[in-house]
Amino acid sequence: MTFICFWLRLLVTDDVLNKIAYCTNAFAVTKITQRNEVFQAARLRAWFPTNLAEIKIFFGLVLYIGIVKLPKISDYWKKMKCSVNTTDRLHRVRDLVETMNKNFKDTYTPGEDLCIDESVVPFRGRLIFRQYNKQKRHKYGIKLFKLLFYSGKQNDNVNTTPFNVVMSLCNVLLNKEHTMFTDNWYTTVGLARELLKNETHLVGTLRKNRKHFPKTVVSTKLKKGQYIARESVDGITVMKWKDKRDVLVLSTKHSMRFRTTVKHRKQVSKPQIVLDYNKAKGAVDLSDQMTAYQTPLRKTIKRYKKLAIDLLLNTAMVNSLILYQSVTKKKISVLDGDPAPNTRPKRVKHQLKKKEGPSNKSRRACQQCYKNNVSDYGRLVAKNKTKKVNTFCINCPNQPYLCVECFRKLMKSVFM
Image 1: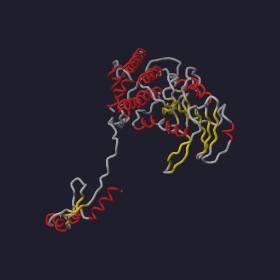
Image 2: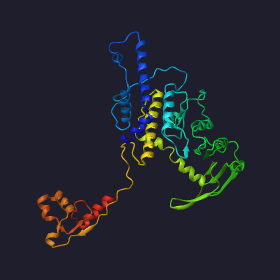
Image 3: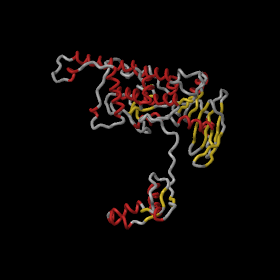
Image 4: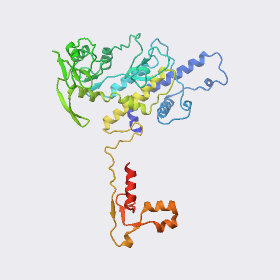
C-alpha cells in the first residue's frame, strides 16, 4: 500500500483534509455554545480543536479497519460532523465530491475506451432517495454514477436521466475521439447522434422499447448464430444477434463484421461489436471488486459518512492504484503494495536417482521408513529395522534417501 500513497496524496490533497478539519471544529464549537450547561463528566469539556495531522491519522485508521478486525467498532471509530445547513440533500459531501472530481480530472488522462456505469454504496437506513436493486449484492443503498450521486428526482441540479448522466460525466471528454461503452439503461439512438456531433463514438446494448429503433430488427425471430442488422445514413449500426438469447447492440464505430474466436476450446464466430463490448465492459465492476476485499465501510445511520468514506478511501484508493500502474507499468496488490510477479514459479519435478559407488558407502536408511519405524518401535529398534537403499530425490532440498514405495506415497500427497 505504501507504493500508492504518493498518488493518493495527489487526489486527496491537504486542502480536502483541512476543510474536513475545519468543519469538525466548527461543529464542535456550535455544540458547545448551544448548551446552557455543560456537565462536569461530559466529553465536550475535554474538547480541543483538531488539525490536519489528526485527520490524516484518523483516515489511516479507517483504512486499517478494512485489513485488521478489532473486537469492537468503538476501538477505532470517532464521530464526525460538519455544521452546514442547506436544503441540498447532499450538502455535507457536495463540496467534497466537486473537489475530488477536479483532482481526478487534473491528475489522470483516460485512454480511448471509456465505460459508464452506476455503483451502489450499501445503506439500509431511512433515506428518501435510497435505491433498491435485487440484482445487486447490496440490494439497498445510495446509487452513484461513479462520482455523480443520485439524490432523488426533486433535486433539479442533478439530472439523472440516462442521456443527462452520460453527457454530464463526459462533458470534458467530448471532441477527443473517445469511445463510450454503456449498458442498455443508457444506450439510445438520440444519445448516439448527440455523441457523434461531438466526435465521440457510442457502443452499447439496447432495450427493445427504445425510440427510433428499427422495428424489423426487433420483430425478426432468429435461430442461434443468425443475425439481422440495419445501418442509418449517419453511421449508426443496430444489430440483433442470436446466441443463447437475443443480443441487441448499437454502435457508431462498427459495421456488421464477424470475427472467429475461441470459446471452451471451440472456434466460434461472433460480431466484432459484441467482442469489443465484452472486452471493454469486463473491467467495469473491477473497482467495486477491489474495494470489497478490504473495505473501510462500516454500519452507520449517517448517510454522508458512508458517501464520504467511500469516496475518500475506496474510489480514491483505486484511482491511486491505477495511476501508479499507468506510470510505473507494474502490477501491485492494494493490500501489500508489492509488485506482482510476472510469471509463476516453476514446479519442481521430483526424480529418484541411484547413488554410484561401493554398496557400503552408497546405501543409507530410507528417511521416511525410519520416521515410521521410530513412531512404532522407538529409535533403537528403528535403526536396525529400517531398510537401506541407494536411491535419493535429486531435486529435493536435502536430497533425502527414499525407497521406491515411500517416494511414490510422498509425491502423491504433494500433488493431490
